[in-house]
Image (cartoon, rainbow, N blue to C red; front, side, top):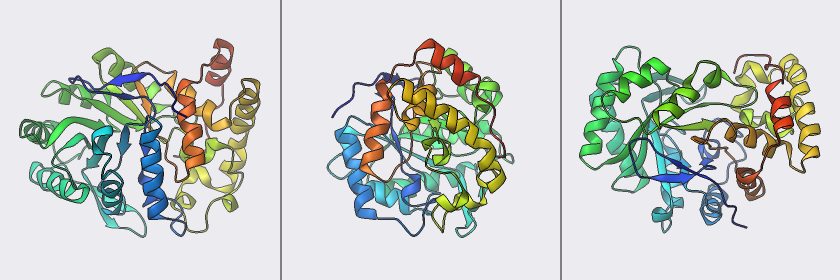
Length: 322
């Protein structure tokens, strides 16, 4: 199976990538701490590439550091087929609680890039993203440091994560913003509401949606906190508390009816809706299984009739903070 997906261009670059990528975070960080299998995760990443997936997304925060090591192993022999993306600028204080702080200082980012290159086992990173903008450091300073690393050949292109239109514009004025990565799904529409998706489309910037399946909830497989693994970071998220899950079930129930009507899974419909938000919009759903990976990839070519899109747009907002 190799699904034909539309291609998305990185801003300020000739580089393009297939619209459905893979987010590797959950293989090492955040989810199901007792159910991780490095060998299977490596196999999933390689299978993704065999299916036509190119964008492989990680970050130094995940683990911390262990996810980059895993991705580096997975790409041995596959490097030329992948668009390798990682992130820096979030420093883990306590892995047990996922507590982190932001560091956008140029000296730190330079050291972080060098460390990521070593862990990944590569001489350049195709897309390096500022994981979060440090409120203590003007974005121009952080962005200028990354732009210098592009000139040095260590980075191919650079992007932002969870940035506002104003912040993206300030960075873009210094050096092309290749991409903006933010959460976007049927239960997290802030990037649409605040104009980020529209701005990226207008400026020729790729928009990359992380958590397009609502951290797994929009797969239709989570009906209560008991459906989550025993040791799992989602237990800390307000949206996954019992009352919120119960209230948000109405979203998934409606999705299930609509998905059945077009012969798709709930997850595929959720991913296809994100992709329908613009030709410049891509997704990086996370998974640790080949079965769900294949479903996700197939969503990249799933057409959505206008009446289905209208019904999806009318779905209620999610209950609970994300």
